[in-house]
Length: 238
Image (cartoon, rainbow, N blue to C red; front, side, top):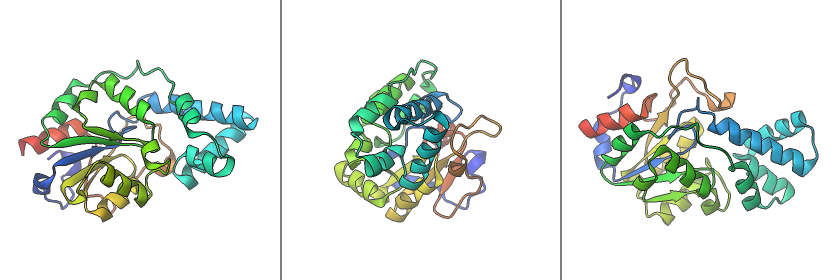
């Protein structure tokens, strides 16, 4: 296994039972130093300014409050303002992805995994598809569970994972979840999935919120790595 997870008292042989590989999208399949999330983040702020007539600072503060409390800004806007979710998702994900380079090494490592590959994201299906296509990995996925498929209830709500399991006939006892946010792995672990925290490389830029970043590895995280390609490749070789 890679050095980043070597300190964890876990047995990589546990992955031998896995027949479904589940990946978060943003800041997991591409690294958090990418400018994609800041682009989306800025579009969310712009949407809130236009919707609520707030100044930029106030709109951004409310945006982050909703994100922290509800799991996504969209969930807060639906709850508080009955916002039409499709309009919001179309606007905030209308970004230029050309700065994101295709990742043939990731494609090769994922293709070698035995079993199905699925995306589980709090973003839209269109965003997941466009981003995976930009990375050159869209053809590898057997399905994508986006925010609209969970009736706009985001991770980390357990109900969202349950809907995901049902929609894609996933046996959590034979599945692994790769995710960059620690608390989004609580429900998968409780459901029986193997959990893998994907961290940024040491010293690399990280555009996530401060509360999304964790240096520790809590008990509900089975493995952690700052090298997703290397981690997956080691699994196949092991």
